[in-house]
Length: 411
Image (cartoon, rainbow, N blue to C red):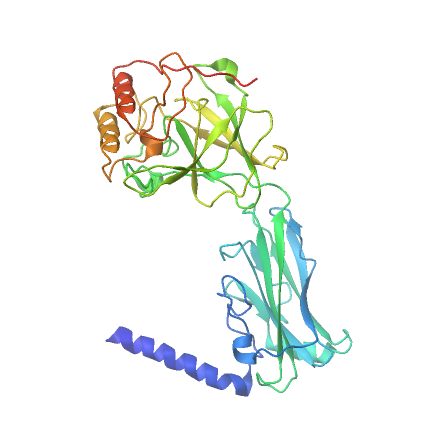
């Protein structure tokens, strides 16, 4: 009952606010989330001020089309309209999903103010805008600083400008909307795709850092024959994989591979995974805008007990990001606990049998798929399926037999 009363009270307060708006407007600043951005759900000041078409504009001066990660930029929001007498604004910077990107910093607290993660005018700012309107060419200008994020991919500057007739109400004003897209000057690196200790198909759940069974959080997401990453946003880009250490084939250290076309990996009876096969080629034959989320890379060069640098590069395989160091698990070590001299054990064999039997709580294909069609002594690439061969080779690993396949070095 209390919850219903609280909800009703909030509703009444919002109705009162809307009823007051025509009389007083938002001279002190609009509510957060009214600049037409993704985070605003497309809502703008036009909700209160109407959809009048004007002859003016709102622009963001000095907004970088390409930002340097971590750098700061001094922006100026300019609201201009020859038929009006003053202006206000609201701005945000967001990634494609609507998450606020970087940090907007108030540098002029007299005329601008923080409003959650938006920045907009103050009442003094509007008064000063009216006083200086003619001198600025029938325009108002507001200064704000943006500190770019370290590297999250493309962002968008969203701004709403209100050109007012200065009658202290929401009538007779014109709302202008604008946006500027910006991409990082450096290609962002990929991030870890799977850092959970789960044995379930979804490969999601308790983070390594909070799971008592994960004695080595840095390796609990590792798999014997796959590496899992999350591609950086933006693109099209290519994914480069460099061998850092591969104890069984030390001459291959430094070999470069590139991810092929993104594909679906069957994961019955659960939803399919996304993956890409590593190709041995001097420059990438594939670049694309990678689907958000975990991407499972596989190929003959991904050998148990090895480490790799994964980079995002441009379509030509150049201008690469900083590397993400990833590793593969011990041969046959499928589920937790990971590592140690007692691995793999019966739990690993049982988990592969469960996957072969299409049990919903079995580990994912990326964990249980250990071998493809190759025979011992031949090259081998996982075949994105779990069958009796995977069970048999996990038994071999349990019995102490070493990794049985070879790898062809890139030319």
